[in-house]
Image (cartoon, rainbow, N blue to C red; front, side):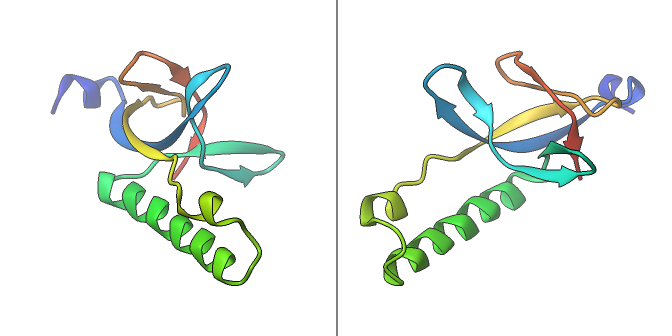
Length: 103
């Protein structure tokens, strides 16, 4: 058992985007009760597939004339490894602290 597992933490992956005022932040969340919680993916591939699925949706919206071309083809999301704590909070590779999470 690793030291992280003995403390109750685990590794995961989160989808981020860069913002003007906050810098890199998690972007995918789901409603749980009265609040939104960040989604943590078990594998990097799962997170990448979520980004790809959203990109496909945006391209289809362009084809359906519901979105501009540039908005449809630019992917701003990327995957960041995170450490998830037992209390549902998580820390990214830059030491930024977020939470809680779902999944």
